[in-house]
Image (cartoon, one colour):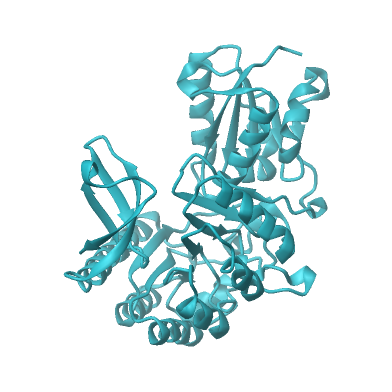
Length: 417
């Protein structure tokens, strides 16, 4: 085996990937490896991939080329969702040494140490065999950390490959998750974002719930803020909403996937709610927390989405008291049931619909932020940019920028908006 001394990570995709990369990076450092930037020519490069966009292959190949320019002898391991879904494809990329699927990525260092070219490159396995939950949290950003509380999904929505890439829903119990949260707090983070694939499903195997978890997290010392990342509307209970509205540390900020404002399209997507439930959840939040920030995921161009369906979505969102949208253009995914649906929406139509909703999102964001103009709110400061400006967020996720010489990262100040 080569004498590896340094490593680098290149992470694509979601907050969950970043939390897992951080945990794996700490494992490297605990075993004496030094962390360097990609341009510094690491001995080992780990590419943690995503499958949500159709650029996964392109981004992976580009990163391999960059690594080879900085160190022609670099050892390259590819992990993550794309590695589980298309290991053969990745293994054919020149320069890739090993491809590790969902069950193997947390054995990364052992696989590198035991590397034998004659054994082949791929260690992916069957996704049905992935049953263990491995906790993780991100580090490197002193202010905010992403705490993985759940993994996998049992929903099998028509457009989604995540159950195929990450397996069935699973989590630790409340007690074990609290111990991981304490480690994240000890790292110096002032804000913890609870993340996972379907976090509303937390604790099912242990006869516990997400509500049980957040009630216990709220009692921990040494943390200023928690945020709940994306949560399915059918799993966002009124009890959770009520608790957040009166909690000490959970922020009035929700991100709730909608995907479509048309019930017919939601049915085709195999979503587990309809627009009436979604509207009810938004009303419940705003009733308990009128100042709450609410983000929405929307997919445009799903097969069969007519102009009438899309207009339903636009009108539904216009009338909804939400703060911003994350707009995704539908793209075909192998082995998903959406591929069986006829009436494919042309890509130029998908792109045009994306622009329309992004414009609506911008208007909603301006209106939401503007409604708090003149109010004084606490801002937790984060990083300083190249222009010597520091950015931070209010509890309800309004971004504030000020000259850095007035404020300190990882501290909170009262600011007039």
